[in-house]
Image (cartoon, one colour):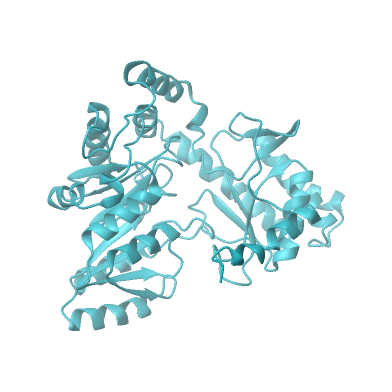
Length: 406
């Protein structure tokens, strides 16, 4: 049998393209953060993880440009050999201080961070307890570790404790891994209770703060700070609030020293570029000094969440989140809503399985601190129009627009 045979049978994407409702790999011709240009048309961007709006901040841009002037465009090697800059070490030091951890280690992407950190610290004699809705990079890191991976029901503390009891009775090393803020449904992990369970059974707790860092917590340290707990390991990315590309793991110095010498995705990958490192450093400084940014993005998300609910859409998530999912439940109807929103001038994300469970197909919206009040009202009005045009809302468009403007 030809190994390529499976490719011939993959027709779903082409079918959606032919119907004009294929929502992926759309090239942007230009971007100003809160608006993008596609095919000569301007759309309000509500599908980005640029939560604080720093990708176009003058300080972040200039830091990246200056790093290119000083170091060039690439380090041309791995951190392990020739690719470590003083800039990398400064970024790691500042991240460790910011996160309240002893040390930090930067990887080239957030995905590689989870691959390297989890597979380095866990082995065949260990057990990883993994929330069923964790990010794909966490599951792939678990697979690479060769540890015994046991999935527990999403945020189900009773199920987690049963797994902990069994692993503890077997005298296994145990790592609990969860997302702090889940990127699709926008819900928070019950970290207070998970910290208590980890301590009770001698487990370690790792929190992926990719979507929460910069946004949640008094200082912007993420969901763990928001919940008032201290994880044993904390992971973060630069591709969201940090307006860059890369990722990091922070934790005890002895553990990070071990990872530096055992994390394959660090040792065998080119290091984060000078521009990316400098941009992340500049963004970190802004996160520290301008807390009003995270207040603003959460205010915007709350306004949209309540406005969409008033219109009759089914939303999910927590008020402490810049992510507002609109649950449709049926893939075809969700894709038609996505296309109609696109035609109405909104760039959103169409999400289906395996990113969400079957029957939870949704439109993922996420917000930026730089969205204006006028844009927020336009977003609600355009959702009202799209909901009426697709039959998801029964309210006439003029009444829906009035409700959206409340």
